[in-house]
Image 1 (cartoon, rainbow, N blue to C red):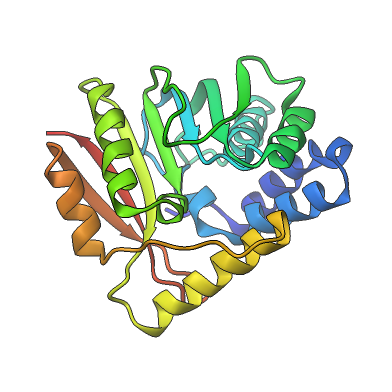
Image 2: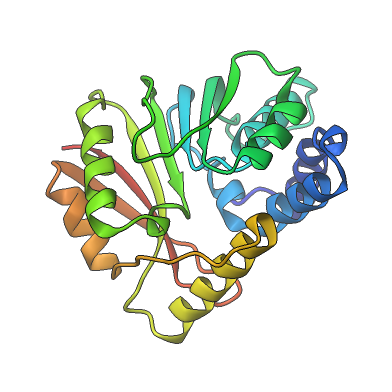
Length: 239
């Protein structure tokens, strides 16, 4: 059963509140993204990720994933979680890696009071990857060339345990107009944050899945379009 829309709005407001010390931009972006992006509600679905886990968030931006999961945990602890819904996943530790230094500063300001939350400035192609139970790459792999995508996924795979979950949200380059809308949106978001237009390196969904299968990972897919976008969440685990 999907979580009530009222609860999603409440969690988005709670999580975004932490970003007020980081400035109006950080707060408004967090509030809009958490309330409007279906990914965050999907992450609370039972069984998608381990109930207790260490998270490695590659391309973490300002750390919204950490703020979201901690907000869900506080809601549950207050007894405000729906009685007929499974409890939210517990984030034991969080390590975020992000290339854009201002985003890292905003995330550090927001998460300063959260235990076991670390954000570092680094390039996903070369940064050290600490051990984790959940590794997330949300809307970021298409910012690096195809050979770098394959190399990064191979490094992640080498460090995965038997029950590690790899979460990727990717665009489907075979999806026509919806894919081009996704690319345009990504480009505009990067321009708003960084003042530059990125070069994007997409693949058809079948290509993403073939890459993961070639690394010995079994995959399940969850369509996550929203507003006509061609996005898919892939959950990959060791075969």
